[in-house]
Length: 320
Ligand code: ADP
Ligand code: F6P
Ligand code: MG
Image: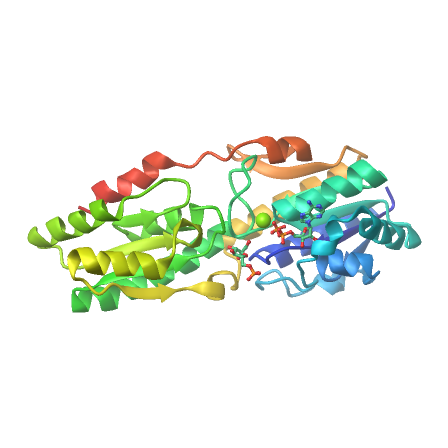
């Protein structure tokens, strides 16, 4: 393979830039020309493609977001629209593509591969950690640490006032950001979409703990696990407590990638480019039990993600 391209798609995540850099430099090392597609699939269908060299990716390893930019491009689900992207690639003689994004991005990648014969390697780049075939997605670790910073700050003020805090975090349908930041931040209650919860029981637990002398509590709510205002209202009715709400929002999606995500970015990129170089089948790259893996897209979608319920349950014990 002589020419490949790289793009980022869907929600950005910390480490995408480090990953693009590693794709570019690995490709150039193997004497493969490398192109950047701007704005994900949107840029692909509009032919926003430029040649990248070593210097194009200088000084981006530490930056959050993605210098290639990203987009949500719903029309890309249409085969006729995908065809425009395929023409754009062929106009440059590009035979292989590295896409960095989440499950939606991978569905686009699978279609480009199945329907148009383009070799596509998918690198899981999303803060949500919602892909079952890989233990970690790129950006998750940095995001969890940003959330942890927020929990630490909230604890300072909530503890000083004997208050109950509810922090809403992202994750779409996944509770992993809430779970890992909650455990690391010492949250007593972690509400996730994967496991049902009972607000009566939580209210009674808060009341009982206050009788034992516990004056402050932290609740971490995954955005997919319920309506924060309803939860706060119900807790107020049941306990009389005014729960103080913080919605962290996009702050948790930006920021400099940490060591774990930069190293993961490099490992994923090296694997993706080597697979393209060797003419291997289109695959989703991942990490399982600390080993870099490649599975076909179908398998990547069909696996059901296991949620760590035991870890979730430990929050109550550890927060007593
Ligand atoms: P993520 O990749 O983080 O899951 P999205 O769900 O927004 O983010 O998906 C990114 C993009 O992938 C979409 O905007 C769309 O262009 C493309 N995409 C999503 N689903 C499909 C699909 N079923 N077929 C083709 N392309 C898709
Ligand atoms: O997939 C990443 C993510 O940040 C989710 O956690 C969140 O639900 C969503 O993207 C927000 O989407 P948008 O980029 O459209 O604001
Ligand atoms: Mg997604």
